[in-house]
Amino acid sequence: MQRPSSSSAIIIGASMAGLMTARVLSTHFDKVIIVERDLVPDMPQARKGQPHARHPHILLAKGLEMLDWYFPDVITAIKSSGVPFGDMTESMQWFNRGGYRKRFKLGREILFCSRPFLEWKIRREVLNLHNVDLLDGRTVNRLVTSLDNQSILGVELQPNQGDALPQVLTADITIDTSGRGSLGPKWLEQLGYDKPAESVVTCGTGYATRFYERVFSKNAQQDWVFVTPDAPTERRMGGALPVEDGRWMVALSGWHGDHAPTDEAGFLAFAQSLPAPDVYDLIRRAKPLSAIVQYKFPANVRRHFERLHRFPEGYLVLGDAVCSFNPLYGQGMTSAMLQAAELDTLLKQRRGDYRGIRKPYFNRIARIIDTPWQMAVAEDFRFKETQGYKAPGTDLVNAYMSRLQRTTHRDAVVGAALLRVINLLDPLKTLFHPCIIWRVLRHGLRRQ
Ligand SMILES: Cc1cc2nc3c(=O)[nH]c(=O)nc-3n(C[C@H](O)[C@H](O)[C@H](O)COP(=O)(O)OP(=O)(O)OC[C@H]3O[C@@H](n4cnc5c(N)ncnc54)[C@H](O)[C@@H]3O)c2cc1C
Image (cartoon, rainbow, N blue to C red):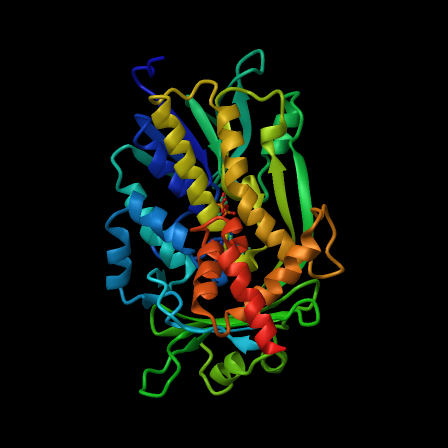
């Protein structure tokens, strides 16, 4: 089927998922319009609609690969703006399950920049595309439909300033990337459709984050630091990332309500209570550059759009609006990029024809989400307080994973296999390859 002569797309939300979707759709549609509730300044700044952006964001190696694919110049531009980077595992000091992971060269880079900085660089690239426009300071109130409610024709938007009347914006397709709090399920229900079923797995995660001055001297710590717990007996973690403008971004977190406080003494005491002293040693004499900000994340939430039998034409959902994972595993941005890339592949296979796309699209992104979802919720199920659907065999897999994690203290082969899976480069099953199982067992026997 041929594309219409002039085609257009609306994207709700100008955060990471919205920007990646705009980049993808710009090659398939004549016009792409992003509608964003916040005013979006041309600078690296967290907005009201994304309070999470004030906390550390690591782009996994698979996400960096996607970024390079869709924006070939952006990584060089980011590096040349003074953002620290290096081999992901050579530059890490990661204490996990009673020991430091062995350092080695993974051959995969990591960029250390704040989320607003990364997003700003990507946004500039997207808004430079000739056929992408941003309408900021406007909230999408509802979806606009055909008379029979079978097709989404666009959105109604309300300018935030003044007493302007709502406007209707039409397009061939509307993509909802409005995040975890998306009103999409409610809008669908109002139009007579079922809401998607939700999988909810609690984690009760809390972040407390602060910037510190990074001192450049011969002996000063420059590598990134991670201290993660031996769950379930320990439940606190901390990290320090060397980010742009000569700063450390330090975050302390914990599961199920064990959260770092935002006062000076409480923050330091929490850092001191971590299973290894690295974060505390780094911040106890460092100069703070900001207040301590908190963020609470109650549960992993996955919306199963792929299970819906009835769904309107011309409407898709992507990013956190479909699935938001416990952020401690750093998967959200990469998952959104993979979903956008899948949409791209599908549109290419269909020569740009978006009609009837929703079934294959939701089925395919469900498969993409499966791996990070399984990894995130399995880790969260180490804690007895975690509620939600627990797949059979989770405890057994977790017991094996604990052994495997300890093996990474000494074994670079197992370390590389694990880091590749964590970074969504390889499927989970590679950790169950006989060669890896053998190394894990051998390490266990040697320890005994
Ligand atoms: C504390 C924390 C730390 C995290 N750390 C990492 C990490 O290390 N690595 C990683 O990959 N991911 C991480 N994530 C996840 C990551 O932030 C998200 O997956 C990512 O931001 C993708 O989100 P999104 O674009 O789908 O939604 P969001 O970032 O939530 O953006 C939604 C956008 O839609 C706008 N919007 C909402 N409603 C409307 C409306 N009605 N009309 C118009 N606009 C609207 C909002 O203003 C916002 O700009 C973390 C998350 C949290 C909470």
